[in-house]
Image (cartoon, rainbow, N blue to C red; front, side, top):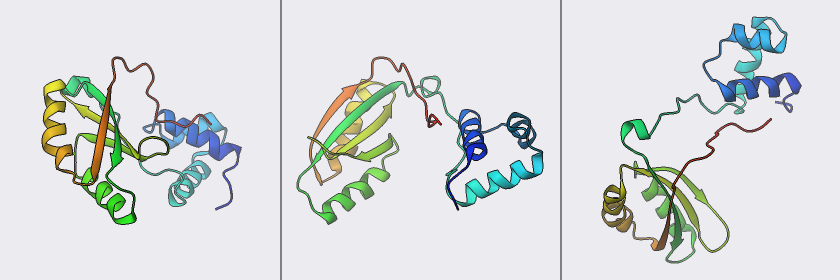
Length: 153
């Protein structure tokens, strides 16, 4: 697919703000009829510009209000250790995001737990069982001031 044009970018912006918006509503906002908007959205999905639609869940309402960013250093750097780490981390339900980063640490994890006791249990019994980890450094979120999954187009 060629690069998205201004109308495609506008559609992506609108869908990023509210994925439940209807084709009819999108069409009105971009001044097109519903059929071409439907085709554009279908093409954006098929070409990977839209990965998936999700519901943003309120973690606090479900008693998962402690957010922790955990910086990880691997024991050593080689392809198999890195792949082993990622495979192990993908199995941990508390880890909602995992990034391979540059700098003093190798990975950054975003972790949701119920409270400090739950996080301690997570560190000792789950993260502690990941053999490729050399060290971990935790930063606790005191207040989530901005949380936007949308790209500013």
